[in-house]
Length: 353
Ligand SMILES: NC(=O)c1ccc[n+]([C@@H]2O[C@H](COP(=O)([O-])OP(=O)(O)OC[C@H]3O[C@@H](n4cnc5c(N)ncnc54)[C@H](O)[C@@H]3O)[C@@H](O)[C@H]2O)c1
Image 1 (tube, rainbow, N blue to C red):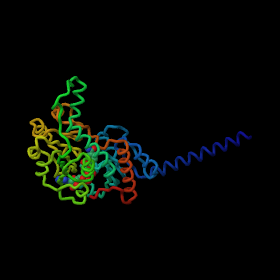
Image 2 (spheres, rainbow, N blue to C red):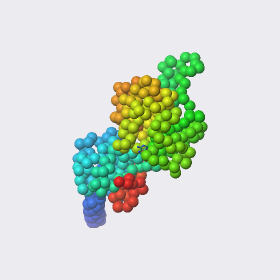
Image 3 (cartoon, protein in one colour):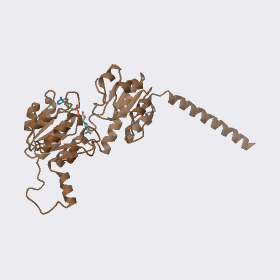
Image 4 (cartoon, rainbow, N blue to C red):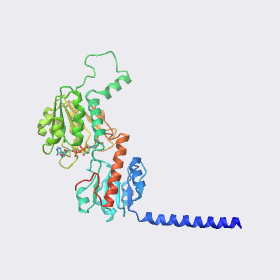
């Protein structure tokens, strides 16, 4: 008798649990759907999960989701959580359909997004400025020093027997003290780079941009100059502008030919701002002293690319924001932008379309 009463109670409990599971499933299925295009740093996914406001599916891989798969997966989603390898263009937006209200990219660069198409469809866009500025500026300084003081060549020589006796001019490079540093595109990252370089006793900061930016320039006592003057005067030229139709290939043979033979060119913005054939020629001919690139076209740059044959070219695999803290901060901000966008609230960082 006792055992049957217990069994009945057990059965009642199971039925209630089953009911609540199916109620939950029903509730879940009405939540906005999000497609996450990559395995993201954990903090951002935790925010989505704990919010209870969305259901999401992830392309759980370190490699990009194949385009055909992406086109399938976005069908009917309300929001997209993406990174810079996904081209968000008319084809993708058509495949997603009219439910798509929010695109949240885990990047400050937005050259992978067709802004006109997004605007036309009333889709809101979140991005991740500021949280990566410190990491990118720090890496840019590291790349600059690595290039100007020839660190890659030096470690190679030390490891492979090229290190003979101490020699007077062997592996000499160029120093920041008393130099002129030029910034192409004085935005958040440009200012942060200059701020760090001050400590190296730079004599003068100059910059060019679409227009003078006195409020930022004052922070680093930088002088506004033309593109020509930037090329002519800079001992170190750091490219920090966004990739746009206007800046595509803006660093070309015209620019390199005006630079000093002793100057160092650094690009941590986007590969598309540089004409790589012209850069190769300039480096090979000794028109400029060296180049440090964190970004290239294409990415990855094929290992047989001519730029890899040059000792005076240091190439990094697009790692400027790659610190654990920053990548988690980027994914958190992107997740919060996405949720705010879906709720119809202001995003913390929203791109004005
Ligand atoms: N390597 C990396 O991993 C990495 C990481 C973060 C950002 N980035 C790149 O760095 C760029 C800058 O980021 P930010 O946060 O400083 O952006 P930002 O918008 O604060 O600064 C960009 C600056 O470029 C200027 N600019 C635009 N068009 C120009 C032109 N034709 N000539 C000269 N200047 C021009 C803008 O006016 C602005 O001042 C991003 O767009 C992104 O592509 C790369």
